[in-house]
Length: 329
Ligand code: AFP
Image (cartoon, rainbow, N blue to C red):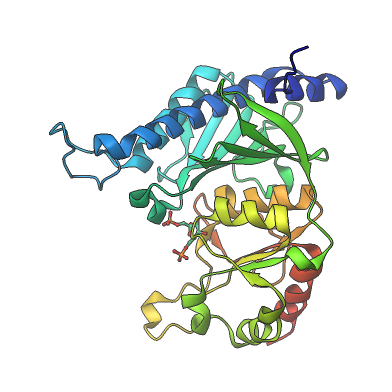
């Protein structure tokens, strides 16, 4: 007898039916998966065609090169439009909100189609991150600036590794792998491990002296207990934390020798970076806070591309540093 893996679509169909839900969400996820596969294909073949270069360059065919993140953005918008299910989208690649199907749409999508661009020229992993909120069908329209706690789902593709992780509201975080037929298969529920032996710390070590003193002190007191890993692409770094436990952090930068380079509000974007991984982490038994120790999912965004500091991972570790962050200065 042949053995078949359960596909993502089969998994999601069962999930929707179990919870008595419509198929609209399936159509949206199918669009996001098509976009991710298309971006992955472009990425894998791009280096040979000379298309991973900087915008303004010329590839081996003598054509103008478009930035890869701009290409990924256009691909995603195409599939979101074709799905007919999206009201508006917010993309890292567009300053303003993007109307997709304001009348008939049902979901709001926040995305970064190619996060971790410093890995791009090396062909190393980048992320496609997204969060999904739903139109308020009963009441008055309630706007597009949604806190992470309002997301129905949030996920990430690690491109070009063929892994896809999806957090579903009150239904866990699941990981899938792409197979030889280009289907995402083998749903595996992710739970952050309790055993601290595998835990890791992940942050940009070269920024350490720019963090708040109390964050630096916490690092000194804790770093020798855990392995240290840093890729420089949130999706890849968070992927490891979700499997091994520990904490990823991108603290506020407040002690930079060049004050112009300080980032007291943090670097990462709230709606399509921090809230996305925070959502998946919380569904996997972990937690996430900002520089004031406030849960990331509680933060009400005030603008589209709002930034935040981020501490995300195993509950014990994040709560430990959150206590330090909450202390009165
Ligand atoms: P880029 O896309 O500009 O490389 O930013 C990636 C990112 O937003 C996130 O994916 C990383 O975790 C973080 O920034 C890395 O930042 P540093 O290069 O400052 O460590």
